[in-house]
Length: 246
Image 1 (spheres, rainbow, N blue to C red):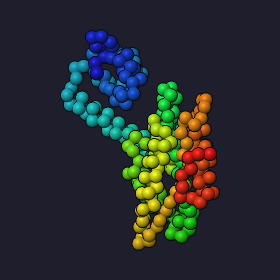
Image 2: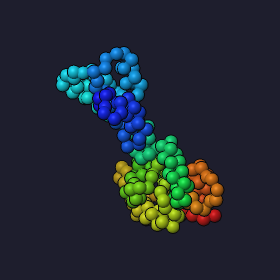
Image 3: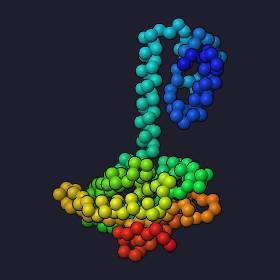
Image 4: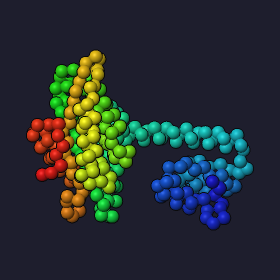
């Protein structure tokens, strides 16, 4: 981008782009005839990642662009690692809270609904004790894979911790979310997980809530707390079931 533009200077435009979700992650290189150290400092402070003085040498430009793209690729890789669970490859708990809070705020502002389900693999300790921890890890990865293939693309899946998984159903009430969870339940129950020639079957217990059950201002933690209570009821009442009331 040139610093001197017809309707706005490049410094201001870069600052505007940095506040726009669609463009904020695009790396920008300034090219300009301005050569003072103050201009250079202002360019970097505005958010540009590099600064080339005119006249621009094509080889230099190509080399700088390649360097910027390499840095950007490394940043993307680091970011991806920071938001995903190392074992299953799905979102991690920290990122789930971040994105769920945004969805909750949106739904509250427009009086829309959303649902949250907390799922826990039944008898997971027994799986570890019987087949070994490597088998337990394999079950968790397979569990995440099956849910990922069965849920809708817009549903957000994350590993909540240990053998617990969490699902957010955006703009979805409990009735619709329950239908998706029943499909997931059928897929899990039907799956025979093979690990080192051993056949492992597993089920899950689940608690489900939606936003419109609750009056007043809520945080995402409040919804998860109630989903967790219902998941505990599912465990206590026989496992392999989805509790969505009470």
